[in-house]
Image (cartoon, rainbow, N blue to C red; front, side):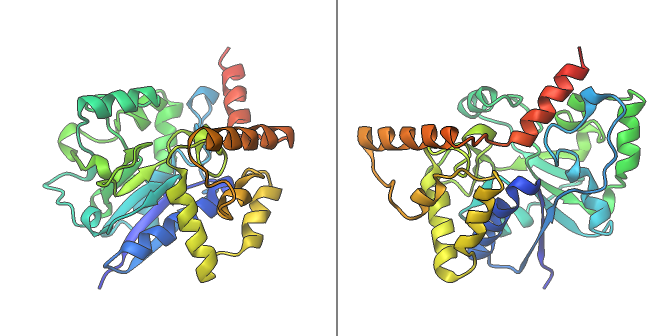
Length: 292
């Protein structure tokens, strides 16, 4: 039986988050799954600093057909996700002649949520979760970067308009429940902690953090993850210092008292010098400076 291939875009600061995502995928899967983290891929930097990656892995998704040997299908996911249902539903979506499947057209409420998070709204090509027909995608990353260098398109056109493909080659059929933007309910299959500054491992006040903590607690209990690994991420400045309190359940308090306690954690993290995604925001400031 062919394994479900899930390629995950990540940088070094989220490698442990990928491990949690992988555990959640495999725990619910009815098919064998292979998770391939894409970190520090050899992607050359565009000549124009304004066209560079917004994260350390923005362009990684365009490397997937080559990494997959230009055969079969693959799923792309961002690192900042947690899966709660069988990924088989995604894997078996029908391309219906398209080359990639992206998120379905958003409802008015979902579109409003997306806009608040800085993403395009209605009829958006939401590409944080994609199903790809690698055999029909002749993408080569050097050529794609060349298109940016030659101004055939810009970052917006590449990442949000998916201009490498014609409209009939794109199917809008990934259900919102498989890319649930900062939203959690009984139907959620994959919650996407898309707001980088409020992800559970960097921010103690995320309202949907508890399901992520529970996954990590289960991994610690099973031995799939060691406490020392979490402590190392904290030492490196990738995870917040107060995270251990949450994983130990010491902050599992609701209501006003819970809010006060988690606010105290936030302030304590900052007092210790923790800055969420420090490298990403430093790179953003550098792009802004170069664009002046």
